Image 1: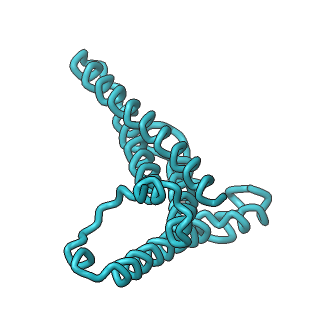
Image 2 (image 1 turned 90 degrees about the horizontal axis):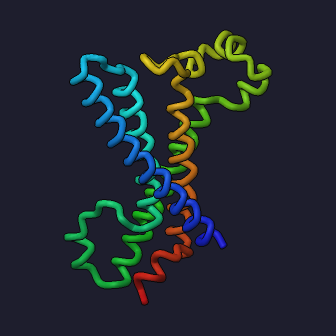
Length: 179
């Protein structure tokens, strides 16, 4: 069941990442055209950068599910199969610990419970915590940066799900490779 959930989430992440990759291409082309016409749209640069960050985090999370992460296997290829399996599980455990740490850092950074305690009043939250995450605006887009940083939540939740699925051996992508 968790393996199927991981697979569905990974498909959504990859679909969104592909859509963002297309949007980056369109934004860069729009930037080139408007700059050569002498009517540059300065917000396009910033939007393309944020789209690239979102694309990267979403595809990195999905890569954990599909097993498309970068790995140096010179040492593990020389190990006996049982020790190779143990080493792979150790790597899965380390990735899972990293994903949990990312989730914890997001929790500490965004402080959702503390924000709720202040009635979702950003000013009261800032005054009580000296955490200004919800106040910082983007340079040219005019939106609050926390909307851009929400990708950190998406990544940490997706990475936790996918790495846990890999750790317990429930990843359907692994079973396809074995057959």
